[in-house]
Length: 442
Image (tube, rainbow, N blue to C red; front, side, top):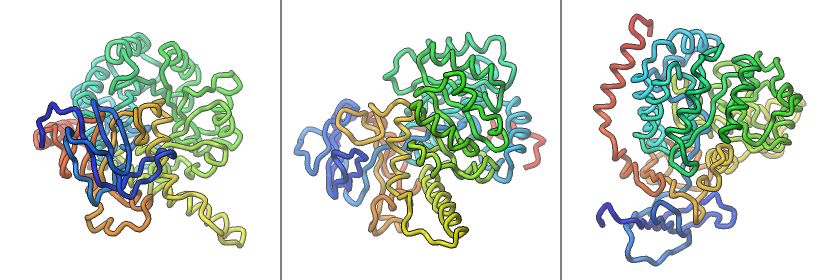
């Protein structure tokens, strides 16, 4: 091993699943990182002055991308496991949410981001609708920065009407913490409307996002709230565009999905939470039929586990189950499956990068992109042997994630996170959780 100041790393001898159509899959390949950037991907790269990472019996692939997760709920994980959407709104957003101090948000964001990195997620959109004061925003950003993850911080308003300081603080946070668009942390707006809040407030958010030239993410087509036909209303006003990320879309009409596609918009799906909480059946197949390739997200670890591998599996199972159900209701059987394991791996990598506007930087193992990648150990019992490479990726989980690199820096090695004092963090999280749920019936 060479010392830590070395800027070249050669990951050698692994099965390279590049998600780049020009490179494809290399049964035996090398990836060269230099100064945080992917410099070469090839069957063999002859270099002698690089740190060597042996990837024998490993799958090398781009880091996963989660396009919508409420990291602030990490300390109260599992608490919503048996909640409907109505119970989640009442108990999480209206009862627990107001109890969160800025320090609670910091601890949860740090924990949630480390959990994501540990499970192979190198980029995440933190949908932070817990910004109750400017200090909450500061501490959320601090947690993200300390974690080492690549993140899009989605500044979210937790209530209506918007606080008087809200608009000015969005601008403050954007200018103070996110002056450059090529940094590890970037900025977006997470808009409560136009279904969980008034349309007029959603329009304020959209105007602000376009002034700042950032993405805006919003929940649409969520259960009965989708009857508001908010996508149709935004379309009527001429406000749809490629800078919008539409989360869920379960009860959007097919016509609305076509509007999103025609405007160049992006869709983020969370099938496990959607099925649990009654958002409507996951719209995966309808979204794809409209000409969109969705991205994937975990949504709330207070309700489901934080693994994007599990989300890939859930996406496959839900869509295949629906298509088989429709066929059987017609007295038929399917001749072939219309969604594949390779499709959902793309949703969890390059499509996630595209939704966040980062596909020129991440999402595939392409020379010139950032060195965000993971190594999966296929010698563990759950993956040995590999007979279908994309399927093996979807069947992996956190224990298979042996190594994680973000911008060329290794943050997980030998199956262990390397930058953080996890026992100390666990105690801070325990203290935060105990304060939040005091007198709460667990």
